[in-house]
Structure formats: structure tokens, C-alpha cells
Length: 118
Image (tube, rainbow, N blue to C red; front, side):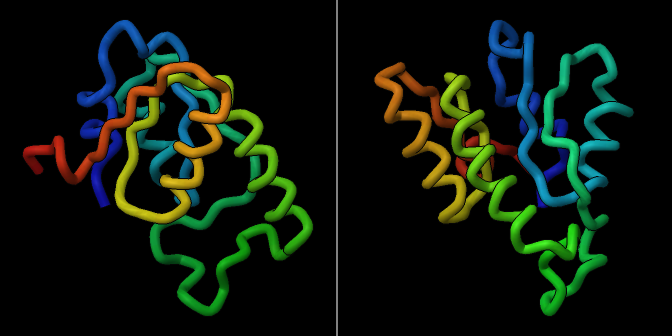
């Protein structure tokens, strides 16, 4: 886990006009608003767990597999409007980057693990 501040620090200032935050953790949304209230945050309004609240065996905070699939498919559509991705390790991040790259735009990709002092 990296705090939201690490992601924001990596994001060039000229690319902070609109930030689409993709997270399963409601704490990250709250942290973004609390510590960076002047930034224009965007996110999908959906049920989320806080931290490890759901546990390994309960991965669907909405309790609706249909809703979770709709959210994932919508996410792939929305990221195509973005030109920068700041992310941690994971196959889902790779797939988001791939979807963004399909637009033909130049995409800036920043890995938190490779660029962070924390």
C-alpha cells in the first residue's frame, strides 16, 4: 500500500487538473479528499470496502457480481479518456494501460514502486 500522496507526487503538476482515482478502498478516496481537497478528483461511485474489511473470501463489496462486471467494463471505457496512469504492481494496471494505449494517444506510465522514495 502506498499513500495517495505518493501517487500525487509522481503526477506532473500539469496533469493534475482532473484525476480519475481507481481504487477498491474507500479509505483512499477519503484520503484524497482530506489531504488534497483542491484537486479535482473523479471516481466511480460504487460500494467499496475499507482496507482489508472484506477479507479474501468476500471480494465483492456490492454483493452483486453483475454490478462489479459493469464497473470493470465501465472503467476500461473511462480510462481511454486519460493520458497518464500512475499505478502499483498488478495485472489489472497492465490491462488498464493496454486499454489506454489502444486510443493511439501517447500514454505516460508511472510505476509507484519504481519511482517512490517510500
